[in-house]
Amino acid sequence: MENLNTFIKAHKNRFLDELIELLKVPSISADSAYKNDVIKTAEIIKQRLQEAGCDTVEICETPGYPIVYAHKIIDPNLPTVLVYGHYDVQPPDPIELWDSPPFEPVIKTTKTHPDGAIFARGACDDKGQMYMHVKALEFMTTTNQLPCNVKFMIEGEEEVGSESLSWFVKQNQEKLANDVILISDTGMIANDIPSITTGLRGLSYVEVEVTGPNRDLHSGLYGGAVANPINILTKMIAALHDENNHITIPGFYDGVEELSAEERAEMAKAPFLLEEYKAALDIDAVYGEKTYTTNERNSIRPTLDVNGIWGGYTGEGAKTVIPSKAYAKISMRLVPNQDWEEITTLFTKHFEQLAPKGVRVKVTPHHGGQGYVTPTDSTGYQAASKAYEQTFGKTPIPQRSGGSIPIVSLFEQELKSKTILMGFGLNSDAIHSPNEHFGVWNYLKGIETIPWFYKYFTELFK
Image (cartoon, rainbow, N blue to C red; front, side, top):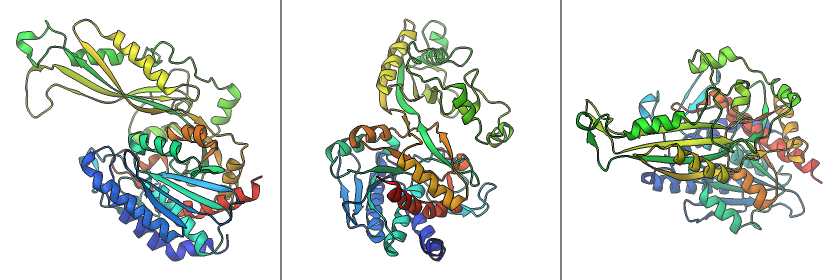
């Protein structure tokens, strides 16, 4: 990769300016009020891929938000890498917890990012990491060093379940044909400890509704005589875990893989300081399923968490009512071999059975996806490992992630190819939270490392 570091150094300010402009657009797919911004972002991505040297770039309409497709085909006989990313972002709420406006990017130094980090919604998840691939391609086409074919598929619905992407992939299998899929939507252990994500958890996301009386009631006149939906809902949620924080849904653990003592010991080699972990979160103790470590709880074990709960009066002052309805949003992170649709069915049946007489329960599934494991003996993984060794000077650690990218299992099912997860963010980058950020060093390191993946994958491909 001749002149790679020189190229990055010469164009560093432009690379940062382009990403900052992209981050200014509030492409929030979950809120229809931002529809025009989501579409505008797709147009920007299209333009940047054209400028980066792609032969074909198009915005593909779907039942939902569009997908930006592009390719650079240099020789049909060479291997093809399909790059996936997403241009939509999470809602920034709660706004008041941001130190700077979420769509007015600023660069500030932090303890983990002494060279500065870009603070903005989507900086790490996934605009910054997706855009590394655009700039890496620009280097390879500008210097005539692209060793293989490259395709891009950048979607706008990842944060709301990728429903249109599923439709698009099934409709365009020939167009998307590839030898490996490359994604940067994960993280690594630390800037001096590179890692490659080899496993993702699946997801089942539901909304529950508990209805009691046909209207809000005066809590003095009716309190103690009528079931309060909020009281009932909190009891039902509490019953979803036992005293060991084991999920109580019958059949929930039937497909869960139990890792061997040897595999758990290998995982434990990853650097982890519990006291630093607690200090970073300002907590005095960790919490979770008994007999498992913190890193095991958030990677190889399934979980069930309430993501939001509401009902009744929450405005200023007092309003003494027994609410008619109470609601909660609940997500279950699943491990490989747990089918998300089956888990959703098991949850629904169990939750309905937890309800006492006097209330009605409705469970609405939203979206989900399967877990995924990447074999470390694959050509793609070996190429990624060599790329990290080249730019970090050390062999990356294979690591399972607690997060979910539901479409990865879909890719293998429909496109018959493996996915390699080369993430450059850190756990401390606050994705999905106020003050999300992405290190300037990490952004540029990704641009530096990705071209090496192309080189080594082409050399190792058989």
